[in-house]
Image 1 (cartoon, rainbow, N blue to C red):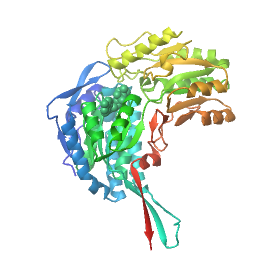
Image 2 (spheres, protein in one colour):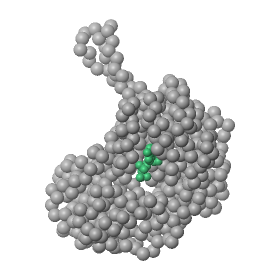
Image 3 (cartoon, protein in one colour):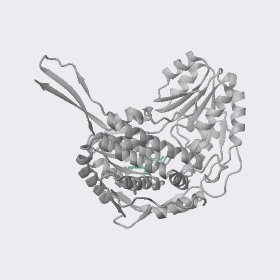
Image 4 (cartoon, rainbow, N blue to C red):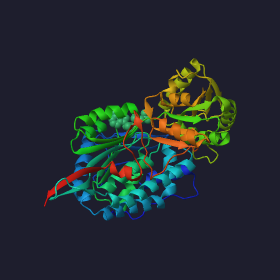
Length: 500
Ligand code: ADP
């Protein structure tokens, strides 16, 4: 067991940002976690972590490269046999302690998420609840890596199908859910008996280091769980190029995902890829319009529009177009944009200046394709903010029909028939999430069947559920996270043919 029995937390009455700062100092979140040791970079270089609501520094983490990543692989490889050899109930015990520690430190973790990622504190609290749910689910699921027996093809044979952990797993995670994405990958991997090396996004490494601290407290053996922070290219090459790493679990952009798939081809790694989305949000004439507006508000503006399941294309049928648009614009302009620690804030900042430039390019292009902007005017004058913006009248040739906006910007397109809606929805390269608003059960099933996606929200703007299979088709990736499907990703199948 670790020497640490209790981590100090700051005064609960201080501001959220002060609480996050105190936590970063008290938990010493300035080192990477490799082989059961907190380590700096060989070069002593650091990456500065910025609060996107202010543009100011809140921390710094090691800028690791190839050599340190190899040490993490050495550690994960050395730890694998021992970890895989534990009873499933023993691995479950570690996961349950990890989950209990997340519960003990819920508010600290939420403040840390808002400080490094920017989302409103209530959404950060919900993210922590989500991470806890994944840790809990896989603490239970560890015992259910069931195999099978099957009828043999000869009388004196027996056939057994067993499940085995894949081996050392590399998990590369994004910045939009800096805590949940780490736990959603690592909890099932650890439950299955794999050891893990996490590379969090450079914008939000602190939440990953915080869960490593909690893993240390939970007593995970050295090398079972590692976190490397630093330069994505060299770390990614070290992880994907090493034959000892047997699987890559990646969440991020389709462009980087494709590159990593190529890199993994050389050693034929198992892949779980959760890539970009471009969710259609389809409102039919028979929908409950108020419910559709409420669902679109959640789906579009959660996390400032920075989720891969955010409504990226709102498709509205002729008969309710005017009513929907009027209500959606009114609700959008009433959103308050600001610092995530301000209790009044609905929409926080974007992650960085690059994200602002990208969405500004897409807005300019939408206007060039006939778009009319309906936008709020009040946004803070520091940090990476963009006002909620609804775009009407744009053509489907606009770049944002095919590209993820990842911002609180909502293009609305008009359609005439059910067939038109399906055609528009599917006429893109990706297929992750989608939403249908209708009260016609026949139509709901017809359209849900026809959509080329992995997830369909029906009369609901949220679909998150730790027990459900989350993932996409086409260029949105392969594999599923959540539920038993999530555990299976980290298991290999071995078939035994026995002559009696
Ligand atoms: P986004 O564009 O939303 O930031 P990315 O796909 O660039 O999404 O980032 C997702 C994750 O992939 C992050 O952890 C990032 O550091 C990592 N990443 C980016 N480029 C590479 C690369 N060349 N090799 C490995 N990981 C990378």
